[in-house]
Image (cartoon, helix red, strand yellow):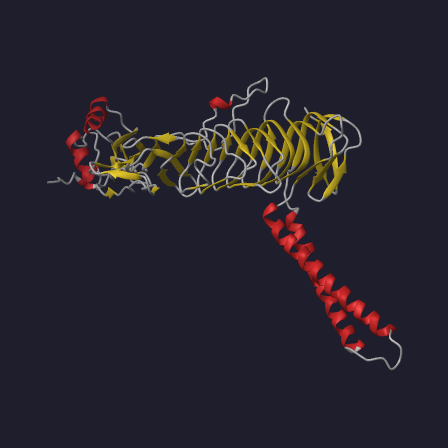
Length: 467
């Protein structure tokens, strides 16, 4: 039970509390006269308690004040406990998460494709994710004894698909349900394990065309006129020879690609190959080639890079959204080679559609104009067909439609060329016969240029020396 201190002592003891109610201080004034009642530790303590301060009291400090007669000084007499908020949950991914697929390039420009690890495999019951749950935290208390509530840690989790399961004995562990390939999508935190379909030799008449819903490993080649289709990754240990490839993931070819005009290689991710020849490629990621890209048409949504120090692009047409990087472009024979960057390839189909509509409208316009001309050349009294006035109305309608289509095409083309920072980099030599296009601007190489980088400045393409 609290004891009220004598009234005449209240002027000698002063208690103050900070604005957060987390610290209380006491000041004991010097006695005014010898007749004043002697102040004791218990009296000061009772006074402090009567002020409402009751948590975190430091009674030993009061004894020190009285014993040392530290009159007039301000002492910390009570301190609350700060609440500790809960720690957020965390996920430990127990597998490699580097999905850039870019090979390691050594100082001499050499790339060891044996060390490129594009596909990460796992075995059944292997731990894929280890979750540390969020902690609840610890409530605090102010010097008045009021509880200060804490905030629990924020939870997080990962979405899982086929080929995974949660350990029934420990729900914080996610494991592989099958042997296969780890497919992790970091943007939407989705994890699944795809069974790996392995072709022990080549894709040929012994296997037929391959169309499976899993990642594919081909230990031999893909022979001419065959096709491989999957929504996941493809790895070919040998050569792709005049074959069709369609995958939503990455394509890795240890040796190289030998294409054909009627065989499309289409990927949703990156392409890696030691060389690419005579191919038709549409790639939603980046294209990385070691030695060369020769007589090939590429449409690439990111960048095209010749990763070896002597990597060359000879012939064909390369289109990439962001950049093209090579040691050399064309050669001493001035083989015509076109490089285009700074274009939004996703809009290309819309441009082709509008160009086709304009072409069709112009064809109909020409037919109407020919009919008008034929009628106007007929002698008086000849058998009449459609009236000239009606045909001229049709001609006017076609002219208006063509003008509308052309205006729409111009609007689309603005978005088509709206790519910032695009460039073409040549570390050795770019030869005459090369056409460089950047966001609609065109530059024809008329002399050999060495160690240059091409960029668009205002409406022109300029080149500067590489640093």
